[in-house]
Length: 319
Ligand SMILES: C[S@@+](CC[C@H](N)C(=O)[O-])C[C@H]1O[C@@H](n2cnc3c(N)ncnc32)[C@H](O)[C@@H]1O
Image (spheres, rainbow, N blue to C red):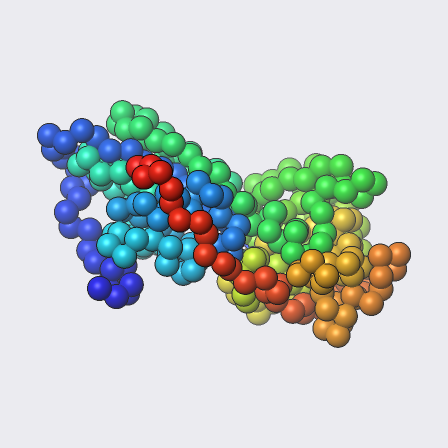
């Protein structure tokens, strides 16, 4: 059976009303799939994916990772993208419980980490309320991948004493955030789901006192073959975000200035090749001014290392 037909198979066997069978309940695994690169999966996540009979996944789980599932595994896409919900969160919660009540072990595969803007907490609570065993397997959240591939640490001595993850998603007009706190210098602010609110976020941060020249970075598709990085400044954040699409992070903070100056990275397989105009020739000692970040350099994908097959599951460990 083709992968496409597997993913489109209806899940009519599961009763969302919580009907039970005589079978002992199964277990739900909330598994972080990381930002996309299969090599950023934990070994535990890879083992669970390969062994799973049922995988309920969201839209940010990459095709490469889904391809690691067993050929006869049942893959259910409950993709939720802003304004394009295919299954409401309540139904996802109930679906997981319904599978478990039918005696099935379920891998709930989520992009990044299940507990970072992933609504994993709600799914865990639902399982707990239904008496279903649920275990969480952490994943590499997108911020860590974006920071690593850009060579721009989220915390950095002298430049960033703290890092804060916030959502830019605005359910009711604009995100409710503590702008005064986020506007303080020498800290990194990572904004998830902020592409469409980039202008608003930048304006709020600057109005609260954050310098417009503060380095910033937008990374689209972090860790994937089509990763694109756009070094910029807070003042130019909205302009840089214009026309971009795909899962993206906005990262604001003094340490993002290192994204283009750390030319040692290409030797490690990631970073900005000098010929791409990403500042790679500046050298370790080369300090790039804020005006250079404002140029909105489009960096080459960080794909020097390709995925290799992960070790096979050993010891016959079951889900
Ligand atoms: C619902 S949140 C899920 C976050 C996920 N749980 C995590 O830990 O990365 C979705 C948002 O995460 C960010 N994101 C997820 N994967 C990404 C990637 N590969 N590159 C850039 N941003 C990503 C984007 O801001 C996207 O809109």
